[in-house]
Length: 444
Image (cartoon, rainbow, N blue to C red):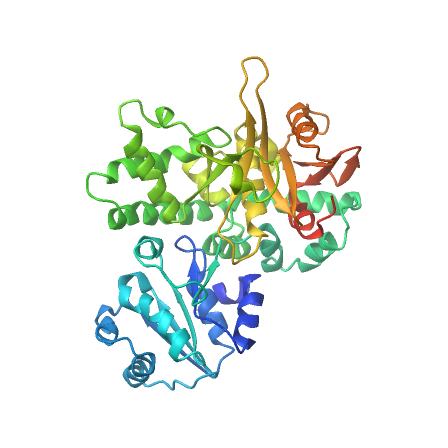
């Protein structure tokens, strides 16, 4: 896809360029769901080296034989260079091992590339890599993991040639923007919400503005993910994984209960299926945390969680959401009673975190007979606990957020909505399009 290279722009390339120039670089493993752009990132980085050598073990499984005996990185590099007729010059060559899960010995070799051949730049990726990584333990400090997500809204603005809007948001200091610019950004976040962040979908949309074509691409991507289930689930598990795959978008914004997926299937089967989807990068669990301080995972309850799909566009495709009302009125908070807006907010919060950190989201829920309370997301920024509510209007009840803040003695909470930046006593309003600005500012 020729246009793919010219349109797609990814923030993570900045980190990869720093890695390239670091004299103490370690081998990298790019982690994330299929089709989020891992291979594209490696190839794009490869353009900045004098030499680039790509090994795809899925296309050429016979190349695993180079890793079959003793793992000597210099010998492996020389064999690959001779096989492909490419030069392997330390410091000037990028070796890219793609679909590395097909060759577990190649995964093991990354440790030895670091220890015995550290001058060579090595990067790897794989569509179902997590299922092999759980079988292999790397000594701490030998390999760096980098997490890759679908394109964020900020990256979408860059790809659409509207980097000036992104810069304006980052320079806004969370102050309201002029009305016409606010309106323009509301339209942009509407378009992004409709299509999501899968690079192939974004590329086609920006070229053709054809939402129906985008839906066809999303349908094909979803079928790819369904086909993948047969690769990592045992035969008797496939039906359970498919069941959960289709059910996740139906339960957005809700505490996930296996009984709501099926009353006829044992919870342990559905739990195992959900774990497999998490390893495939298709879903993220949003765990309950008591959130009395950081790190939030220290008070995480593994039995209480919500589940979000990894891409807002694909989730709507699964839900068969009618996009036409959104074209008439760009109010994303009304889609599926606000569940899609909550999903969008969660994915945006994840997108602007450290690339080296495993994706983590939390929420807070107090269950009481007469006074249930829930805060949609709780995250940590600049060492502080930050509670976040996603709302559909400017004056809706914020009782749960206020209760949480009083209970935890937190001075400020965040409301994400379609309204402009504002600060009202202890509640800061952040528009859907301003989540990157809020994350990067650390102004609470």
